[in-house]
Length: 393
Image (cartoon, rainbow, N blue to C red; front, side):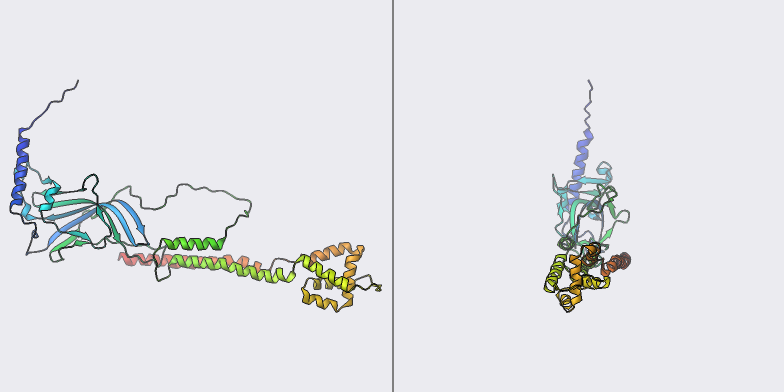
């Protein structure tokens, strides 16, 4: 069984009494309503920040937030004390209740929004008094501050957000704020700021062309609406707007390309059943039983089929020629020409070959989109670098 001896120091009580006596003596004639250097040079407040975590950066509200330890240091010569009287302490860890009895620089954030001091389980703050009257005051804050953003290069932009610190009660001739030269801003080493994480990636090869497709126009409209929902309304065109608008123009132009191809190939050729009905009606109307000419030359048959694939305007021209009627009868009635008839019908009614417009579009669309991307990325990447250099200067 272990035994722990109880050690009692008779000097401990006297030391604590000495601290209380010193603090009472410091506050006896202390005036918390005036600056330490009232009537003289301005008081200097040294600040530094230790960033524990970053919150969201909102383009919609143009603000950012972070959790930090905010430290302030200033010197109050009215609080100088003798170290021999307080157990050789270089600084006194004093209760926060005493902080209300001394002068404070009334620090606030010029561009702050809804910032607050953490108070769970207790108010997260403390202060120390050094022997030379130097005061250290530390708070744990969550700061939400505004950030004026220029979104012309979105999403290739780089934003520089500032935190403006000053005194609410005193001007620059009374209080001056400076950053700590040793470590003005420290960031926690394991701090992660990205809003998205890549958790999985897979690669593969697809040998078959999938027939799955999406409604591209509706998809682009959805992307535009979702992108604008989280962005502020601005009066200028952003880089994202430019890219999506050009993509929308490319997709929408395919509808016009399809209409042109349909007009010059599909509509002019006509439907197979419709052409067959027109040809049969024409044969019945122009049937001549007394004719002994049951043969047709290849040229006549070719002319008949070339004419039969046209619409009603072309069919009327056929009625003016009696020889065409006989050629049509020979096609439908003579079994000797069945092989020729099948090939001729195939050439006529299935002569809808690939349109020249499609052939040109196969090259023009990818080439134009490649040129656009080349110009787009070159311009906006260079503009983003120039903007970053200007803001860093």
